Image (tube, rainbow, N blue to C red; front, side, top):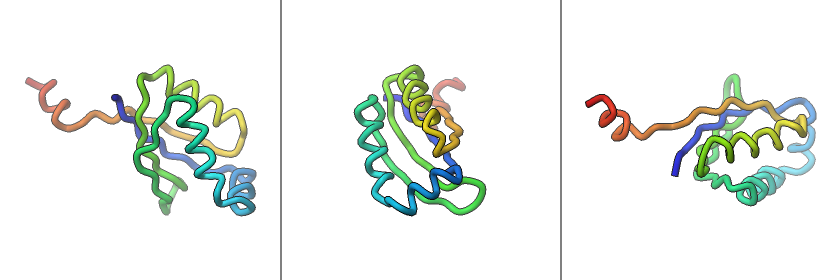
Length: 94
């Protein structure tokens, strides 16, 4: 199943929500699962972004629809990248 890396930054509203309800992160993960996204790893990070997530989804349409839903709430901004395993990448160079 294709993997994607999602880096995200909370908006001011998102930070307020997270402070009031830290469990919201797990709630969103559950919502993503219902939308066909499996969260494999999740990290809080320091720097220009707040979170880094590694997820699986059947295809780009599934990940796009889920992210549009999350972005429409106004609590987070994201950047998403398709992750290609190095073994597949090397094989594609042959």
